[in-house]
Image 1 (cartoon, helix red, strand yellow):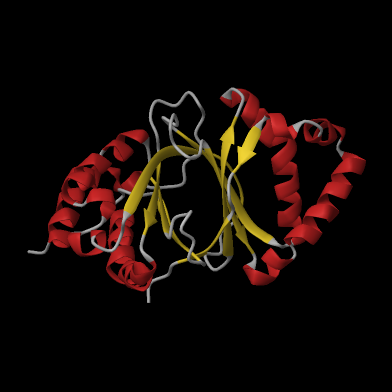
Image 2 (cartoon, rainbow, N blue to C red):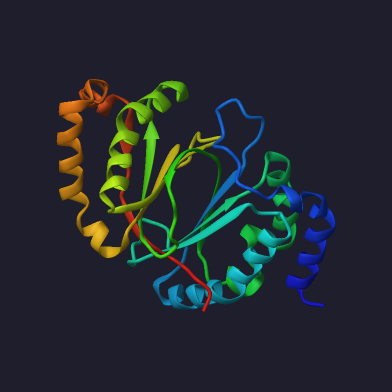
Length: 259
């Protein structure tokens, strides 16, 4: 029996009772007991990028889909950096669990496959960062075929204050981008146990293809001009946004699909 099959059977036994509950959950709040999301960032040498991509488009995505069918995962998404970039990850796997209790069972996966990868795939990566987190804000609907911009941030104020800033300043703009048709979906995750990590908030924007991404700056200017005229609360938030966060390097990525 293969390692993949053994792990699948183990998950089915442990999680059978959870299958019926693998439906969309509301965004988490800062006071929830446990994390419901893992963001895994994989770094690979340029020579290994192709092999890593091919593995995930085959066995990797098949395993994630099995976990979803079994109720272990609510949703998952695998993004691959469009460019070779030594300062950023090559592949990002986003795992959303039905609840915190189920998320805690990831330790059983780690005991057999560190970071969810079998030995042949682990040999292709040089570094892995696992970031526990929670989904706080989301809008739109993923088409699964868009172009993604992933932006890591460090926020500099208490979580409640930063969340108010996002709702007052960021989401009115993103909702405008959705209305203009350049954006399919946006998701905002906050990290847990963020001391020493390279982000405390993560924005994942799914644009409507390369055309949507190309219209980013034009649409941003249009939506902001409208907000200046119609939303005084947004104007107030925009005046001192620098005090709330520091943004890191943007990453452009594509979603991996099974071959």
